[in-house]
Image 1: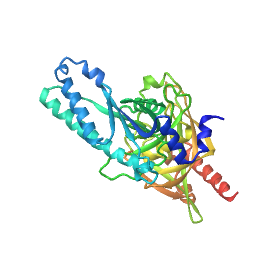
Image 2 (image 1 turned 180 degrees about the vertical axis):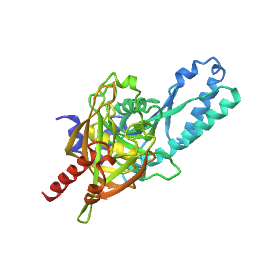
Image 3 (image 1 turned 120 degrees about the vertical axis):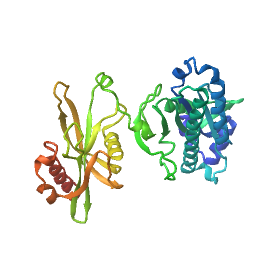
Length: 366
């Protein structure tokens, strides 16, 4: 029998004892890396105080991750949080673990920036650095003062994609990100990512800096560019309403026209994940994407390649629609939608709204 499945037949206590025998411990594994360190450290003005910089950085880690094992790695660190053996401990619950870790990361990020500013003023040299974090949870093995295991490799890979800075968390290890205090300005989005040396893609939570990355046109031309969009509806009693947003007048394309929500698909995303990300980032709401109700479309710019896209029906889940890139956002009934002139929408979009509403009605009546 496969060892993994054999272990699943054991009780939690038996598995815990089995792991002890094998020298395994259950832990939260955190990797951190200083973004931009290598190129910055090559500056001749920086060399005299590199040791001071590193000592200050590791001092911050040790003061905040007090009860953790910390292994320094030059321009980063591996941090091990051994989880209590008692099944009754609050610190075994994923929500409790990740909430405390995010709080610590927020403190470290703030102190790190203050440290960079202080040293920059003292030595008269710019320190344009930030931190990237990768977090997993699972079984690892202690060998002397060192640790080995697949989770350590995975946390390092997650840290690699935490660019230009920010936090990446294994969603399978931490299915729910708890509500954070307003003082912690970290917002997370769901993505699906392919990691180096791992065969399968994994589900992850990424902070806003990572989720909102856009790729320059020169890079995009090297691979296929695909767009995705959504038309969002909700049911209020017997009335179906659609969410429309008017683009700002300073937008290069289709200024002052109504749209749904959408944009470029990230190279590491599925269609569904991409649509959800755009609604969360642009309009601050959560949606369910109805994969079976969709329509293809194409974007054409003068002297540019044709960009294919897929438009999906979305059902509103929660949140208050707001946006810095739109002058008006409102829910409209089907009758109100019909009264708005077609020329007030991106070409062809009004009919898409009406068609998707009709399909949504059929789906809920079926």
